[in-house]
Length: 514
Image 1 (cartoon, helix red, strand yellow):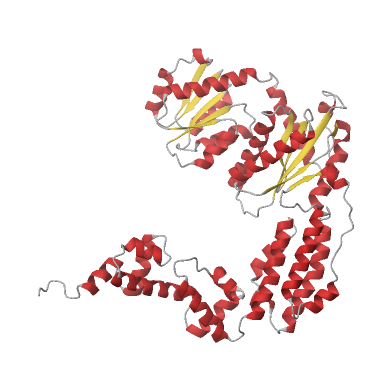
Image 2: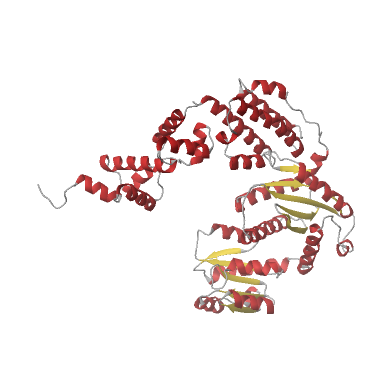
C-alpha cells in the first residue's frame, strides 16, 4: 500500500518519513507534498491508499483535498492533522467517515498505530471495493431518473429474488447553505450512512442524496427488521449530534430487486404525504395499513367559542392533532384540511376586534411557522399554540398604546440582564415586532434597542458608583456578554470608558489634595 503525506511544514514531513518503519506497518511507497496542488497531482498520477493531510495549508486545506478526492472516487482513507483541539466539527466529520483526526504535535508512534489499523482494515475488506464504487455510480444515476429502472449491469450480477431494503433520511431543518456547505453536508451524511450500516453487517448498495432535503440508503436485507429499526434510530441520533439537523427516517418494506421500482414509488408517496410524530420515524409497513379517515372537531361550535374562550378552542385543536397522530392519520392532506378550517377562526377573531393581522403576527415568523406545521406533528402543535396563544394574549392586554409601552418599560427595567430582543419583547405584549416598534418609537421618541441600551447604561452607572463590582461584572449584570462592546456603548452614552467614569465621579478633581 502507498501513503501520501501533505503538510506545509517540511520538517514535520521529514520527521514522519524518517521516523516510521513503513514496511513493518504494510506501506510500500511514501509520497510527500507541501501543498494541496502538489497533492492532487500525486493522487492523479499514483495509486494512494492512505492520505495524511494538515487541516490548514496553502492552496487548499485537508478537508477540501479529501472532498476533491472523494468526488473523483479515489479509494483513499484519510488522517487529518490539526493544531486546533476545538475543531470538533471536523473531528466528527473524520470520525464518522471512518478516518481519524490527530492533534499536532503528533508522535510517530501514534501516527504509525493509526496507519497500521487502516492497513489491516483495508486488507480485511472485500477485494471488490472498486466494483462497489462503480455500482454506487450506477445506482446514483438510476435514482436521479423520474422513474427508477434497475440497471441491467446490477440485474445480471445479483439474484433477482435477493431481499433489499430502502431508507430515506429527510432533513426537517430549514437551513440556508452555500454550495461548499452543501457538499460538505453530503460528504458527512453519505459517509456516516456507509460506515454505520456496513459496520453492522449490512451490505450497502447505495448511499447518497436523492432530493434537495433527503438521502437514501439501499442495502441487502440480512438482519431482522427489528434490528434494522434499532440501528436506524441510532443512526438518526448520530446525524442529529454531528450535523445538528433534525432528520426524519422513512423505512421501506424489504422486497425483491424486481419489486424495488414499485416500492420506491410507495416510499416517495409516504415522503410526500406522511407527517412524522415526535419519534420522526415512519415505517412503510405501518403506513400502508393506516386508516385514512380523519376525525375533526365541530368547527361551527369552535367558531362560536372563539369570542369567549380561545384557550378552549386551542385545546380542542391540540387534542385533534394528537388524535390524528395516535390514529395514524397525521398526513399532509389531513393537516391541510385542518389548517383550512383553522385560518377562518383566526381571521374571525381579528375581524371581531377590528385588528389587522400584521399588528399581532410578524409576517416572516407567521410564514415560517406555517411551513413547519406541515413537516411534523410537533410543528403543527407549535403553530396552534403560537397563533391562538397570541390571539388570547392580545385579548387581555390593554389596547391603549400608553398601557402597552408602560408595560414594556416595566418589563425591560426588571430584565436588563436578559435577552431583550425585539422578538422577545413582542411576545410580552402579543404584538408583531414591526407594529410594536412603531408604537414604541411614537410614544418615546426612541427605538426599542436605543431605549434598552440607555436603561442598561443607566443601571451600569449606578453599579459603578454604588458597588465594588468589577467592570466586567457590571457588564454581565446589565446584559452585555462582550466586554469590549459594553465599553463602546458606555463611551457612546457617557463620553467616558467605565473606568474613566468611575474615577471621574469618585475623584472629580484629580491632582488636588486635601
